[in-house]
Image (cartoon, rainbow, N blue to C red):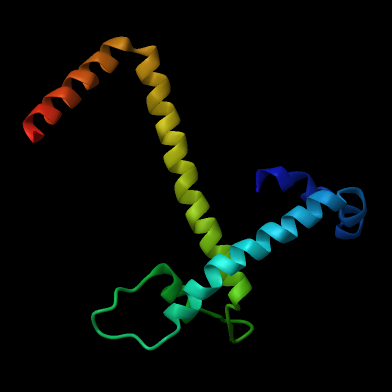
Length: 125
């Protein structure tokens, strides 16, 4: 989605003219996202048993806009699920990059980690 950041700087009518190809690509990406998420959302709309675990989507399906007295529509739920998953992967990715950078910066820690992994692997076999 970072490729589409420049679409937020102009009014929508100008975006569609100047950035026509990016706009088409964004629409296609959103449609693909919906084709993945909507069946999963609809599956959670079915009656649940006591054994079912409450998922993030379930909480979104139960929420209501207080001022409008309406629930989220599927498009809004897709957007929120996408943000939720992206947020999780961004933090994980950033953490792993920081870890790898520090392992390169501090070879003594890298060696200690390597020894610990070797020890755990020997015990596991």
